[in-house]
Length: 123
Image (cartoon, rainbow, N blue to C red; front, side):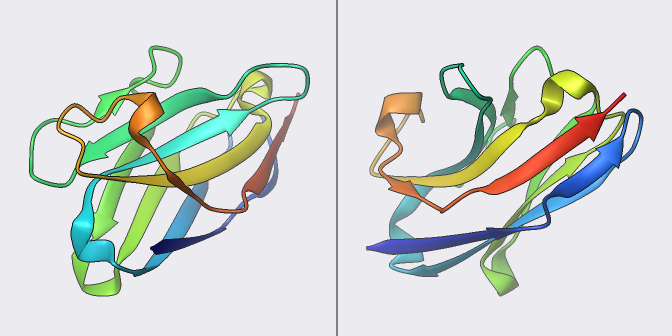
């Protein structure tokens, strides 16, 4: 089992920044992928950014490329999402997720989820 706890959400104005954190515990050594997803009211959950634990370039949704950065601190077992130049369309509940035993880190491979943290961007 992997437990995930997000923090860092909040309300900002357009153009502002936030950094989300995700503290992982449990069998974290089994994780092969970590990622951030988001879900806005009335919309389906979408992938925001994915980090391959074994190495390789992170993957980002086209809508956040150049604005968001996913990273991890292995010593702290913490995943981050730095969000800059925020837009109202970034408003959503953001979820941290982990996958074990996945080579390609597809969205369906993520089986562990945090409770979510709300991000609201006002115009």
